[in-house]
Amino acid sequence: MSWIKGLSFSKEHKLKISLAHKGIPKSLEHRKNLSLSIKGHLVSDETKQKISLGMTGKNKGRVLKPLSNEHKLKISLTNQGRKLSEEHKNKLKGRIVSNLTKQKLSLFNKGKHLSSETKQKLQLINLGKKRSYETRRKLSLAQKGRKYSLESRQKMSISAGGDGIHFYCTEDKHYPLEYSRIRPTILNRDNYICQNCFKFGKSVHHKDHNKNNNDPSNLITYCQSCNSKEIRLWNKRIEDGK
Image 1 (cartoon, rainbow, N blue to C red):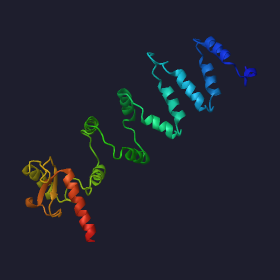
Image 2 (cartoon, helix red, strand yellow; image 1 turned 30 degrees about the vertical axis):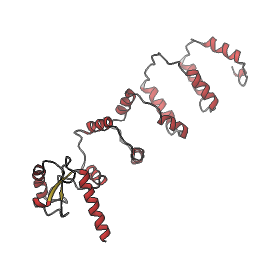
Image 3 (spheres, one colour; image 1 turned 30 degrees about the horizontal axis):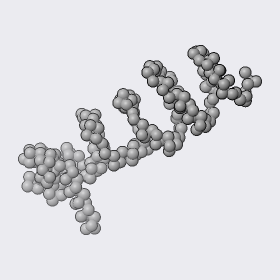
Image 4 (cartoon, rainbow, N blue to C red; image 1 turned 90 degrees about the vertical axis):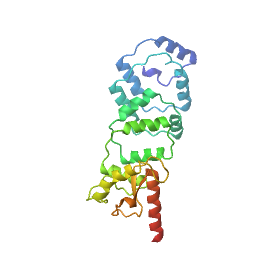
């Protein structure tokens, strides 16, 4: 069929060809040949718009076959390293994703180890983002019972304004063993209430900032927010004093 290459057909002729091929199943070899023939072919914006309009409403009420793992892998490999335009990215941002799709994505990404670069990108994307009560509750339930390493706990402490020292420390850590023993007593004494804002609190703070002075009169219950604020102010005072 090389003799028809480069020939331009009228709209009427194209319509006749389209109707003639309608409903005729294509063999696997035929589909493969078609795929190879258009590989690397640059489609204009006008053509993309026409394809989009042509496909509008075609899948309405139609039960689509689930994609096989092999098909998904091919799509993944095809899109690997593909750079999206800013316009395309903005379209994806405004796209409404169904709960079922979110669930599938969640299961797909479960246990997946992200690179430091990806983590940093996600952190920047979510920076300053206000989450709804429902989202916060879901995140809380997802993290329930999860055991964090000492390194992770230290990072969380520093990000919250702490000094990276975990509560339950032994004698060989920054806090003496006496602090670990007396801490529950102080929390029970103050009924787990922050003595600054009177909200729920589980941080035991040293009034004189001396970790070795574990006298009950020097220890006070704070919530995480008040404790972090107090530590930041203390660190600022030290910096200004220098």
